[in-house]
Image 1 (cartoon, helix red, strand yellow):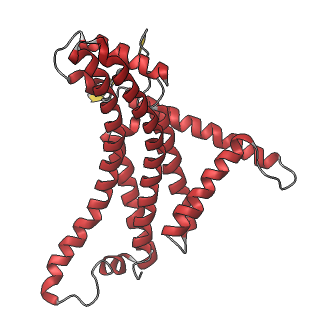
Image 2 (image 1 turned 45 degrees about the vertical axis):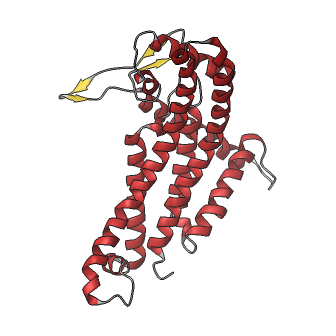
Image 3 (image 1 turned 180 degrees about the vertical axis):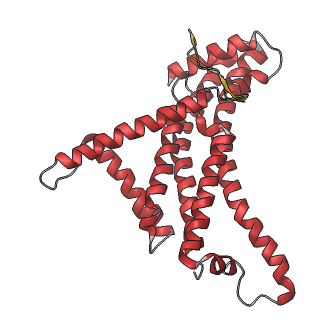
Length: 281
C-alpha cells in the first residue's frame, strides 16, 4: 500500500515536470500501450491487421490476466473437491471461493431472481469474479484497472442486457415478454407513451450498469492523483503529510469499492433478470 503511493508520487512528479496542466492525472487512468513500474516500462505488442488496430493495451492484458487467474484458481478448487473422498469442510482457497460462491447464489441470485435462478447462476458468478479480479489487479502498483475503461464496462453491460432479454423471452415468449412491459389497466391513449417509456427503460438499465462501474472505479484513481498533485501544485513540502495521508485513506477505500462495485453490478444484473423473468410480480 505504501509502495503503491510512493510509486504514484514518483510517476506524478515525472509527468508533472513535462506538463503544466492537469492532464497528467488522467494519464494514470486512461489506457496505454505499456506497463509503467516506475523504474522501467514494459511495452506491449502493437500491430494492425487489414488496417484494423489490434494492438494489445494494458487494459486488455489485465483482462487476459484476470481470466487466466480465474481459470487456474477454479481448476485448483475443482481438483480439491474431486480428491476429497469424504464430505468435509473445504480448506484454504477452496474455502474462500466457496464462501463467495454461496454468497452470490443465496444472497444475490436466489433472492432477486427466485424460481429458476439456477439457469442464470453461471453467468452471475462469472461476471462477479471477473469484475472483482480486475478491480483488485488495478490496485497493484504499475498495473491498470480494466473496469475503469468505459469500453469494458459497456461490453459487460451489453452482455447483461442480452441475458436479461433472453431470460425474459425464454420464460414468457417474445410476444408475451414485450406485452408484459406495459402495465395492466393503462388507458388506450397512454399506450404509445408507455411503450416508448418502457422501451427506453430497457436500454437505461445497461447504461446505468456501465456508467456506475466505470465512474466509481475511475473516480478513486483521479482523487488519489489529485491529492498527490497538491504537493506539486502548491510547491511546498508542508502539504506532503496531509496529501499522502488522504491518498492512503482513499487507497484503502478503493479496496472496499472494488468489492462493493462487483457486488452491485452482479446484484443489479440479477435484479433486472428477475424482473424480466417474473413479470407478474
